[in-house]
Figure (cartoon, rainbow, N blue to C red):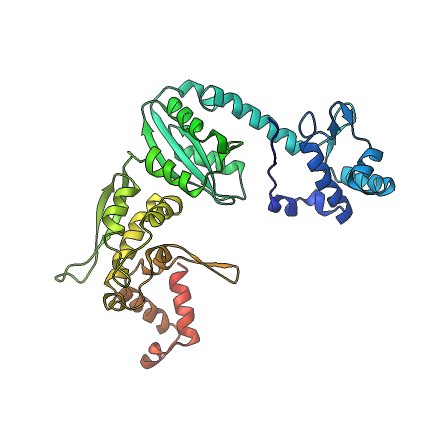
Length: 365
């Protein structure tokens, strides 16, 4: 089946040193050639059926003169942007490599998974979901150690943030992976799945509802008889239990109501690491116990508490991270830092440059 599109990463295009040394005309010709090679047979080759596209043909197809085309092709070839096969046909190494990888994965899919994992196909282990932050694509796979698998995948995508968002222990990894791949086969794009929000919810909250234990240290609110906070180890049976016990019921109401429950759960599943749950739980408790929030002043909707902000193109840390320590702890720490600026006592209450520096020093840690 002919694919309607191919993957294009602007970052890779802009960082390709071979392309950067070519003129803008040569780079424009190359993107035209990529589109033609997407239609080529074999895939990634500058051919129409069995006929190689020559310079004169390429000039007519792209609207350039033959002289311009020859010059630009010379630039691209000298920079090593493309290669030629034994018949002198131009091809894109990356497109050919991607096609081989897709075919390899397709063969594995017929068998229910990665061919390299056939030996452990019908054994107990984990089926996992990973998310690629650049395009929010989802990878559904199997492994006896998802963390080790994540490490290997990250080495394949060095400039992309990838994380595990869910994993489930099953008795037969292969059959479960095959079942999930069949459910979302229409959304498959190479090794990844382009799911909409409803499908992500279904995958995470229905098909991959976790059985594995998540162990976290959760900050407990200090009792009235104790001035120091204590930490108690707590075990969650998945993110859902954390959400039901230590986030949603604790988070304060805004104007008498709380909205966005499902959106918050999905956000925590896809953006908060398992080892951060105890931090989020403690931050939520600290936020609830702050004097202003107790008075109903300045309470945010839960999703705004969780999500980072984008201001003038710069990402600002999520509000919850400012509440990992209580207001009292933060105030004491800021005052300690202010002491280093040799400010008199009363000046500690003034919003000076030193105070801002002290806040930055605290919250950047």
